[in-house]
Image 1 (tube, rainbow, N blue to C red):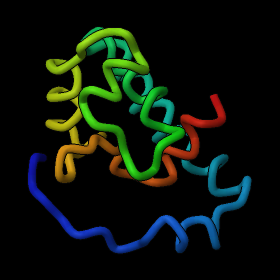
Image 2 (image 1 turned 90 degrees about the horizontal axis):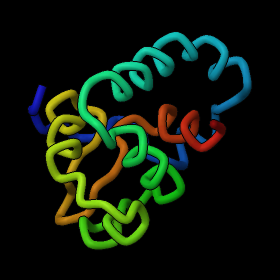
Image 3 (image 1 turned 30 degrees about the vertical axis):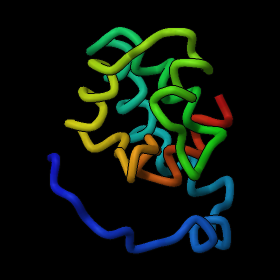
Image 4 (image 1 turned 90 degrees about the vertical axis):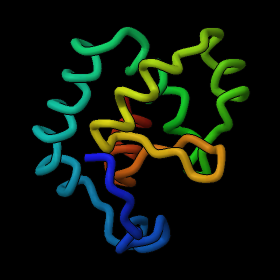
Length: 105
């Protein structure tokens, strides 16, 4: 929690192996993360929906423009739980498969 780590897989690596079966198997994990985001801090699901179409991430200003609200506290909560990360001022979803799952909602 809160520890920086280098990605093992790139987006291209994930795209090469993603298939519907992976989403079925990972569904329970993804649903739990999604459910926790709904229960914890207001705005977390809005943030995830806004970030999902942007694998390169969004700046805080862009995120505010997309959502219409400054969810800094919710962002920090998601970051503490290793769901999103701030990379040089751009917020991104940490787990690529989860990002793609959110896109399908």
